[in-house]
Length: 389
Image 1 (spheres, rainbow, N blue to C red):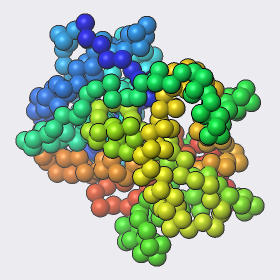
Image 2 (cartoon, helix red, strand yellow; image 1 turned 90 degrees about the vertical axis):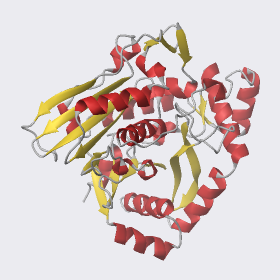
Image 3 (cartoon, helix red, strand yellow; image 1 turned 45 degrees about the horizontal axis):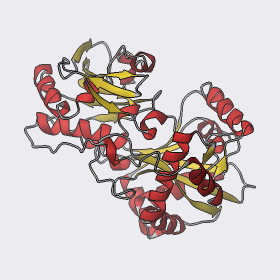
Image 4 (cartoon, one colour; image 1 turned 135 degrees about the vertical axis):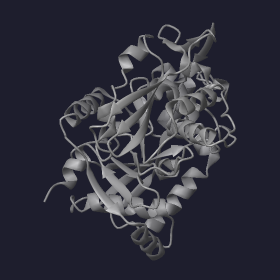
């Protein structure tokens, strides 16, 4: 029996779902898509296995059947609808109990188009890995060559590289936030109450408007959009003098000598810095560049995160209980533009629309149409705050 042990990064995401939906005017037949899906998943047999909770591992024999591309006739539905409502929800409980596999695929016939949906266990893949699989699926269907990702859990830092005492001393020296009962209660309260906050709040910016903003700020798209998105939220808090910016970062090629192309989870929330409310986009870009180019500091934080999680130490780099709260000091951004989801082609043209994954991020950036506007999407309490008059 083959095994693939989940890392602390993976276990953090064990109860989460990662998914994507792509809507096209036309697509190849299901049999063609099935053949290319089988081929693109061949280097990743753990996706065909089952989760073993006792071993905290994916297990497989090598004799598993392929992931079936399920065909659904939804010709009474429009391409403008929420495509996720047309497929069964991915059941994380069944996955965690070993009763279902880590990935599900669908080809959906619509009244005005056709769609593919891929969804699965976030525990086996972050955004980089997931969207790389879909991109490679499209390339392989189109007859283009692809290069398999690097499957090697040994590349993840060793959770026992530091003793418990060493890890504890270092996180305390660095001033990491202690997850006391009050913080834990607040996190749980926020998680529960956020479920009752319906919908998101979205601002759309055209490519021309973004180009104008970047020219005005003199910096790149990410920093410009971060400053704009945070500024709109700060407008609802006129008395707030400062904020801390956190961004989701793919740490491949940046930390722990992890190569670009690693299969699995290796993205983490990174503290960009504390800023005054009048900070500019240039200030944000300068801080982000310093943080994300400091391989030593990033590697240290990753190692400490892995060790702290492994030892069950109640510390984290920031107070996560403030990430999605009524009066936040932390502003958390997940820039998904780099995933280029709207550029996935199966040889029949680019998608009419790529539907975002509905992750509960405070602020995320998304582009659903090739060449189309960028969406700044506020979720949870941030959406509720943005709806205030």
